Amino acid sequence: MRMWMIHSWFCYYLFHDLTYSLRYPPLIFTALVIVSYVCAILVNKITTEIQKTGNGGKKYRKVWLAG
Image 1 (cartoon, rainbow, N blue to C red):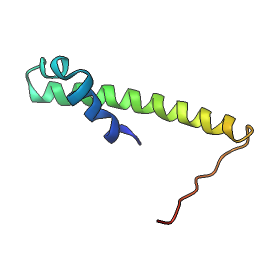
Image 2: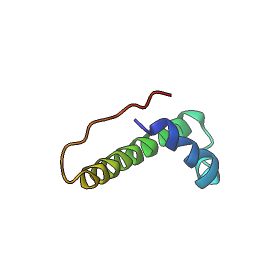
Image 3: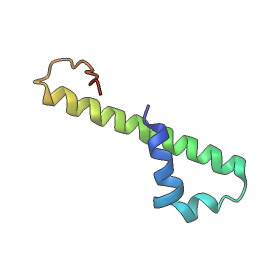
C-alpha cells in the first residue's frame, strides 16, 4: 500500500504544526496511522479507476519492468 509514502507528507510538509500539537507520541502515531491509512485507501481507489478507464474498461494487470 502507499501508506509509507503518504505519512511523510502529513507529518513533515502539510500538517506539521497540527500533527505535533498532539504532544504525546502515542497520539501522534495513532493520528498519523489513521490519516495515512484513509488517504492510502483513497489513492488506491483513484489509481484503480484511472487504470480501468485508461485500459478501455478491461481489467488491468500489473507489469513489472526489469531494470
